[in-house]
Length: 420
Image (tube, rainbow, N blue to C red; front, side, top):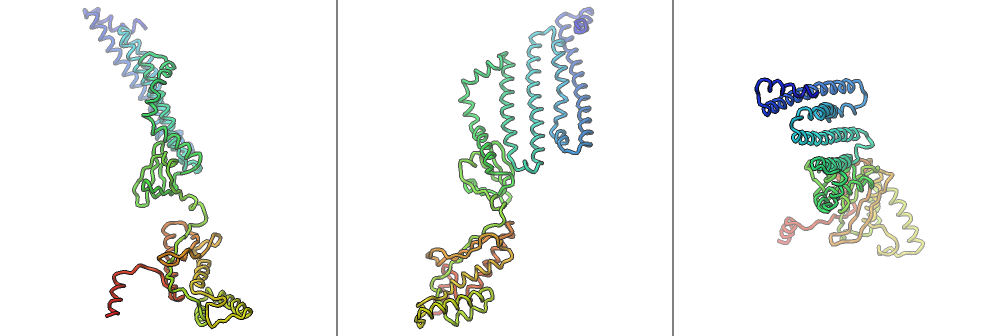
């Protein structure tokens, strides 16, 4: 080997070239040869490995090998053998330049670390893409775990590179890093918070990809499309993207609608505000008129018989309606709402159905509808709610009731015309 490494040197010296020039020319020639060999070997191995992987991927039923190719795992692995050749023959090329040999060898060792990190990153990206294709894992924050591992890998690689350059043993160098750990923690504060938050979010199953969340502090109202170490991306319903710090999910309050989407219905909770001056007892003629409404005919018959029996047994003076037991128009309307909801095809009959009266307000008496629509899709849900309240608003006059609304300019104009 010694004869070969000085072959060009000996030839040049024999032809009256100075020894210094001969050394440099000899080194340059060997370096060119080594670079050509490395390039040829790298190209050949890269093509061979890629071809092998491609053939295997075509025959394989799983898509894991396809993802390996997509993430350039074969290409990165192919660089290993050329790197080993470079490490083996670099001392031969720089035999006459020991100082340069040391520098080049350290550069190659650092490149070996970088190549290792490239391979690890390619494999992790492949695992990430593969896990996202699995139904039971595709809604998990896989990106967060990959990013955490890569952060540790890059930090370890960076420290190893410094240890190689400075010739300090890795463990001794790592011990010395404890002195600046406070600075490191300060620099990576958000990353550390994100890492802790990602673990808590995953363990407690607080958010999954695909969940609909509402986060008023950040103006987010839409579906989670990505969960990373530092951020959570939410695609709002207007197609804008809101980015939320991951640690905000555990430090602030937000609403996750997964419980609704996983349930058998979507809640309807809305009230009609009824004018109080329109509420009255029902006379016999009023009841007879309302009996024509089929949904409450049987109810009115039964209630009317019960009330008559009670009033007769207790000799109630019915010349004044307030005496004894009576039906009210708002009470009958509430019963009508209940019957209407129970007969509505879009309402889930296995979940709560209720029409209730809330405490009176300055805007009237709230008559609240509490039920669940069978269809949870937003567009259909809004249609169902609108359909129900369209009907109820149109039904109010039949019960001699009115919904409250603030007076408008036209209201005063009409009043003035009547006065004039």
